[in-house]
Length: 346
Ligand code: KG4
Ligand code: ZN
Image 1: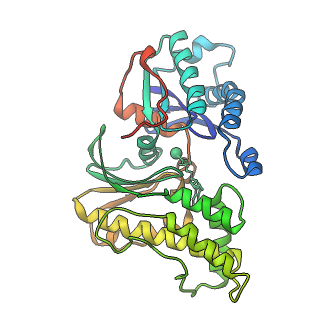
Image 2 (image 1 turned 60 degrees about the vertical axis):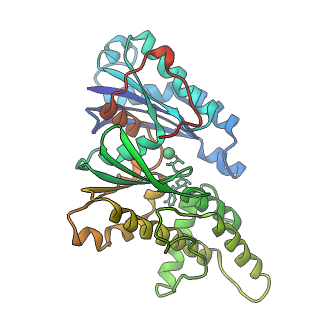
Image 3 (image 1 turned 135 degrees about the horizontal axis):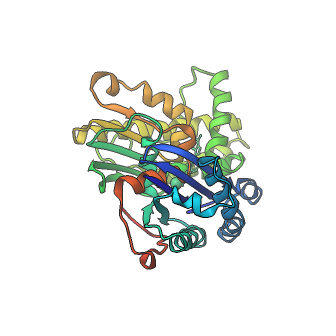
């Protein structure tokens, strides 16, 4: 079954063709990152305007990459290859969601295809099903993105139980906000990772205990990252007085504080219920230091639990994960009832 999938919940415009939920025939992504880097963050109206501009060329790229033998002008033949259309309906920015939803509904009507609305946060989990060994149930998923830090338990597709998450800022949000305070660019996650690498290569034995790890040792599966900003701000203020922390050192401290907390809480969450797989996904799972720490965990050596982290290109927002989520959940919906929901929950 080939699904044509759309993802436009935030600043990316992505269209993919996914076969049977696991094979990515194409995944085109147009990004307006440079524009947001100039403004230091996403301005929702600007993001949506760019998505309107990008959506048609991105569809064409996804279709021609998936079916190179069929000319783009032969739309009927191209859409004969498509069995269903999937689209992110939330959570996200309303203007951005509308671009994907209206485009998907138009194509579904025009070419008479069934449509499957998809929850973006749940879809991040399905990035771990793409082009690799499929995770087994029951699984524990840690979704770490710009808007979410969620620990989710699932016994089967469609039944996701939220075990815990952040009380305030999401992990990606903490990376982004701390990067801004330190004076590193947007998006903050990759900028912090790069600066942190430099510091850790120069001072591999540094203890990295400058910043707090709130709630880390409490026996809950909750995290709190908002205090990090204040602590980083305190360090940058101290820079004027007695201490001198470089940007690279602060970046390494931020990355360590976030990764320590995530890893510690993941071990706690895994202890709550027996699982066969642990999935770590979402934009922050692209972080190489986090990936290294996860793969070194004793948990995966001492038990049969298998770790699944998506390929880096499927960690951040992309339409392939939307196509996979739609395939495994097949929540076919009447076209007229599909609408964006910026506040969508599990
Ligand atoms: O999943 P995603 O692409 O979008 C949301 O659904 O939010 O995640 C974006 C977040 C941003 O906060 C970004 O800074 C973070 O993921 N991120 C990273 C890395 N790459 C992206 N954080 C840490 N290290 C990275 N390499
Ligand atoms: Zn996302």
